[in-house]
Image (tube, rainbow, N blue to C red; front, top):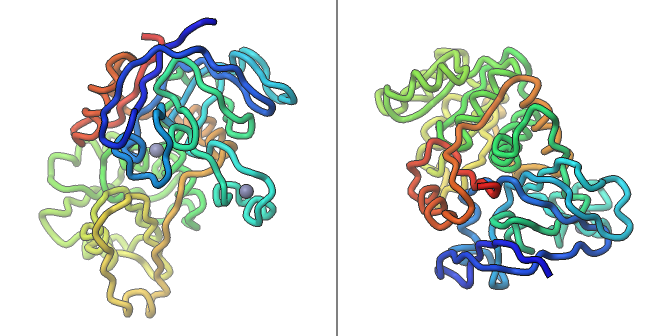
Length: 339
Ligand SMILES: [Zn+2]
Ligand SMILES: [Zn+2]
């Protein structure tokens, strides 16, 4: 039996260890993916730190996967060996629950997530349900595609479902892993794109990524600055601070929406009157399904949107994970399984 490398968490806060495992065989409805690259997402800490309830160890983290179909299980007809595929947060759904019967696969009661429900992408191979696969177009390398499978789809899919129309003022709060992609997608989608971050020094980056305006949230009132531009139809909140989100709410235009992507621990504080008079709203958004990922990859090829990555070879996964957790990475950390 042939062997592969895998990087696994053995328990909550037990760190990551590199082990040798047998190469797995795909069952019915599933494929084996030979992994080329896997992005490291902050949500991987759910597995490594043990925050996800009921997780079973050992578990291989990773849900930003890019690779090639290497074997197909029984009853898989739409995919064949050699297809380039990605796997993201949407790792499978039951097809039978009320949400699935309404076509809302991401809200499936027993929905699966790679790296949490089953072994994910910190390895040479993984098994994935065929419904979780997104086709990777020519023109995107595996390293380029991987971070688009979670960070990319989350900002792209939330923006295109936000109700904002071309020409509207759309602000991206935060210029990190999600935000640096959010600015690019917003600009390429034709929004009047505003970058908001702390400090004057982020302005050149925001403008390079396509922002037409930049607001330094430290040097003044970001809500007032947004109102000077007419108010934002959408503010995409990629930061992990409820306080920072609260500070920009007053910058929403009439009918505007704060779209929350960053899982902040502290609450968002909002004076009810801000919501009532101007019909403003606050909503969250969770990534998307495999076909939304495929759309994200296609749009990225079409428009040139790319994640800025720090790349580590697979055996250095513990160091790469620590780099992601430090918050210092510019901007996504990606494991190269070919390295
Ligand atoms: Zn993620
Ligand atoms: Zn379901």
